Length: 350
Ligand SMILES: NC(=O)c1ccc[n+]([C@@H]2O[C@H](COP(=O)([O-])OP(=O)(O)OC[C@H]3O[C@@H](n4cnc5c(N)ncnc54)[C@H](OP(=O)(O)O)[C@@H]3O)[C@@H](O)[C@H]2O)c1
Image (tube, rainbow, N blue to C red; front, side):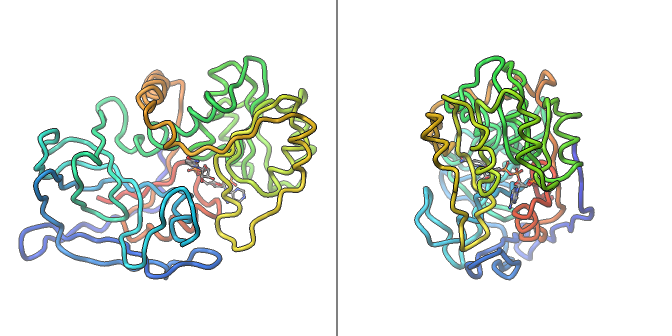
């Protein structure tokens, strides 16, 4: 299902030297609390020409992801942040326009760490060629890309659900959460989502086939989650943190597992939440592990194949939230961090 939230895409104008005009969002300043549009600056210039070993890519889709908030900070993290004046970091899916690398030719579909821009020149080694003949190209940024692989390896290697167990996932209607719950169903477990609002919960149960979904905004999360998980929780796939994590910890079973994938409720604040129910980890002997998907780089082919098989056979569904035009990117990321997206957040660039 593809949902287009904003119509109208401005076409590119050709520059005087015949190269198309590039537009790129650079980092203007670092936010101290919530992200603002003026933390970014839009810069225009002619598209670059590839040098030896490089490929010019026309970016068709830009992925907006929660991790981007962390790149706009100089705090220590698992990847270095973006510097002021640099193009904002981000992954794109696009098409090769010109190639000076033996493995790529014009027309090839690729994903690239291009950043927030319409065109980019990257070395061939940084590109991933994808086969978009069976599925839409944009899926390689969502259920068949980083979010899908994150769900797959986090579930398979950290949560390790056994048939009949109960798996709970937060941000359940989102890019990662929607895959987690559908894998839980495919692997024979009870899948319970946590999401913000009735529409998202209805989608998770009626469209994606989860057994239940709890609306944390309804104000009764503990009781509602307890009712949805009558045998307690065996696996929790954590995407948000904060009070939701504390509530889930109260319902975890003995010898249960938690994959800490994301803590989005803390990303936009200088005052992170302090977990209160830590004792549950001790008394229930919970195995809790942080997850950064790059750690599975060597096994990406396994994840890619498993996910593609599920998508191509109709057993894994996805939903996209599409903004039209690169101008919308800052607004899209700000909205994502407030839960305004409904499905994988993308920007259609051309
Ligand atoms: N560790 C890794 O390698 C890795 C890789 C990819 C993603 N992640 C993490 O996975 C999580 C989900 O990412 P995604 O790409 O799938 O995003 P997403 O779920 O498509 O979108 C983010 C969702 O988070 C929820 N949210 C936002 N602010 C919230 C808040 N204050 N409290 C509770 N929920 C809030 C919203 O859903 P509701 O409306 O339902 O609240 C929003 O739609 C993020 O934490 C991200 O950082 C980690």
